[in-house]
Structures are given as structure tokens and as C-alpha cells.
Length: 71
Image (cartoon, rainbow, N blue to C red):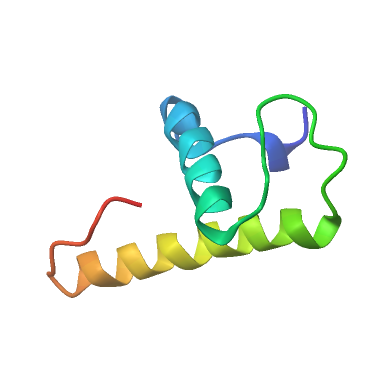
């Protein structure tokens, strides 16, 4: 297994998976459980990029002392 696939907090796997589906739904990417080979690399990239954007926003909000929303 490569280091890239290791999670820093393995217990968060289920929450991250749920977050991925929430983000995909929010931006209109038809991500479904199971096979998603019909999605373009751009669609997959949008999901991942938007996840990172939302996590950074949450971290910045938390650092500023504001009560941020759940991812």
C-alpha cells in the first residue's frame, strides 16, 4: 500500500466518504456508490478540489475562533 492511500486518521474514513458524496451532490456531479468509471477526470477533480476548499475554509474559520459549520 502506498503512503498516498494511508489516512492520517483512519477513524475518519467513513466521515470523509460521506463528505465526498455530499460535495458531489452539492456541485452536481452524479457520484454514486460503486463503479464511477463513467465520470470524467474533470468531474472527479472538481469533487476533490471542492472538498479541499471546504476543509480549508473550515480550518480558517476554526482558527479565527468562529464556530464553523460541519464540512
